[in-house]
Length: 267
Image (cartoon, rainbow, N blue to C red; front, side):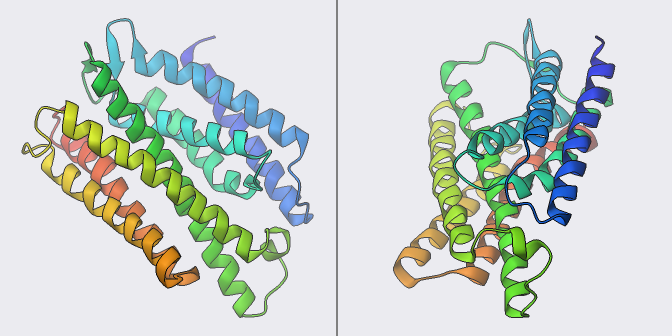
């Protein structure tokens, strides 16, 4: 099967799973349906094949803007799907799957934006892998924070119908958010430390904004976790700081890649 047809099939599978999950939400079903799980697994399988074919070449790895976006959503979806047996994260799929479909299509049909990276050292592989994992987990945390904000607002307005009826209790939603933040902060710490050890010059002209914004995001997430356990920060404060930290992190990575690769045509 050609890569273009595989990308179209993957996008259709993601959208079909999204449609079914929306239908189940309207019917107030709290458990994920096997058909949604099966469609998600098929989409993930095709997504994995696409990423392997477009990002991993015999002579190296393509870390272009769109390729990394497709890889990022693949890792996020894998984490979300595998966590469904322990945590009720299925409502995140409504956001993740359509974005994943878009990422797959764009990464397949958009022109290459960066040269293939060859001869990556073990330290650089650790840095890249931990960065992608950190961004993936903290993306889940940001989506969780947005849903938590909606749930908190609806409950305070005494609107107990609609999506609020099928969401887990507010306390469990907060607990899931802070679990994701702890994991994400740990991975981000590994990313920063490995970058300091194995990247030639983190404060070079084309990296300084990425480094500064990433460290700022780390400080924000660390402050939030400290404030939660020492000062009892919850709800609105947790949501705002999570979204702010996520925005800094995405600006650090995707913002810099967007400017350097797609606007300035630099790797």
